[in-house]
Length: 462
Image (cartoon, rainbow, N blue to C red):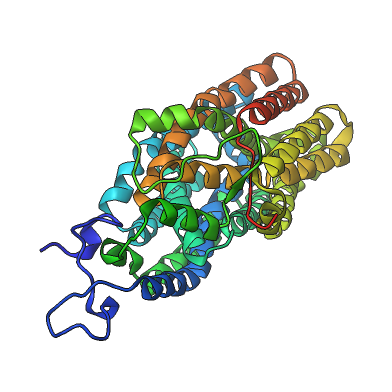
């Protein structure tokens, strides 16, 4: 019989470990787990897993933030301008989207926790290559590898974050994204300072320390016992169980009049069905993620041009953006509980559009910094809310949630993929400010699409 690490979470063929059997089971017999015991096991495991998954989010974001902060130095070393940056980011984004889209099958074959550890090491190796390699072609290859590793890690850690949220029975995913924002903020500052004062190669050291620490924490945590327990849990009423799980997860248990909530079911829908359900949400998230990436990866170049004597502070734009995200995301789960995902997403998209308008129109270094801070606040809750909504379209099984996130990544990629090249072309032809104005317009279009298509679902007790 194969080991549990080789079987998908929730598989009917998964054996139940002795530690998860009932006390009355006879020797050698694997008895079904009573529902209360199963629920207690899920919650206990989720409590243990939460700080470790938060550490993974932090380790995921730090190297990417440092790359953004060091971008002016990396571009000067490779002899590239705005168009070259657009091409590099297109390679990175394309690999990122392809990996996140095709990686849904990994969640069906491997336990996500060991997988996250391997992907952290792969991302670390690719990030170090980005910091070290000077030729433009080598930098492009390293960006390609970094995009693939980061895309797979992004998908896997968010699928595990959704599973932890369901296990705890309350919203926690936004807090995990707060850790990613904090990592991005610290990374942008470190990358800007270290690359100017000591050289981009030294950015490898903090990335190495944090990534290895997260990998060790994952090894200590071990695989998730709920994966083995789900197959033996008695289900008296599958439909009611699905509703109860959604309510406990804090992702909406009651719908406003005039709109139906997303389908929450134990069945994993087919890929085509998922794409039809998720297409509008995926487009909205694609615009929001593209706006986030633009703030992280273009802000340092823009600010360095605004004030050459403050080049060592060029990473402050990305840092302030990500820091503002982190602060709001600390309270984001409370906002989700209070406002619901739809209302929070609409308000956030409007504020992000206003922030990019400030970046495009406000004069000077300080005005741009204020605009990037507003963008950080505005984009803070869009992706966590959107991922929670998307995962519900995949049913209650963890593999279904990963499949839904994978389909969302595919649709979002339709927006994200052309964005870097378009920004580079506009910045080269006119200016960075005009390019940022285009991002503001795209966010307004995303707001209109979200207002028209997102279901009016509120959390129970609102």
